[in-house]
Amino acid sequence: MIYLLNAFSLLLEIAFDVLATLFVLRLLAEAGRADFRNPVSQFVYRYTNPVLAPIRRVLPNWRRINLAALLVCYLVMLLKRLVLFALAGTMPHVAGLLVLALADLLDFVLLFYLVLVFGWSLLTMFGAGYHPVLRLVEAIVDPLLRPLRGKLTVGMLDFSPALVMIGLLLARILIAAPLFDWGTHLARGF
Image (cartoon, rainbow, N blue to C red; front, side, top):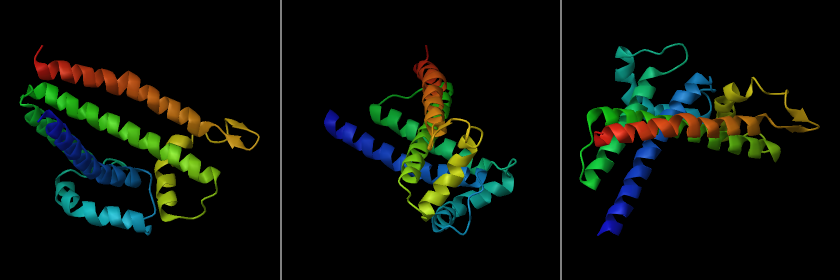
């Protein structure tokens, strides 16, 4: 029975993460000023706008950050954490649940950036050319890479993506993991 519960938990986590990916993509695409004419950008906009449009009336953007998308991402992580606790048969303290959802969101965004930077650097190394996905990923990772671009080159190799990936891994270890531990501690009520 425990194996079935673990399998169901995995499927639920995947479903919530796919939903969160859509809204994180919208958040980061707007922050990176991705080209709206890109078919991938239009897909993301088409499927997130029905949820975000009513929220944006109350919660407008702050600079280039779509606060409505950020709120929806946080709520998705909160609901995921709540469902997983319910499946385990426990009810966490509210403060712990809120901190755990924040830790999940932070870790998710850092991991998302890590995968995008790695994928982008791999695709550009092999000269993938113009592809809508590559252009969107480039718009998203460019704000992270721009400060280091050209400063860490040796010959034809640019090591700025490697340094950014190390920074993202360190942020997961030094910021997201302690926040997750603190949230777990609060959720248990210690």
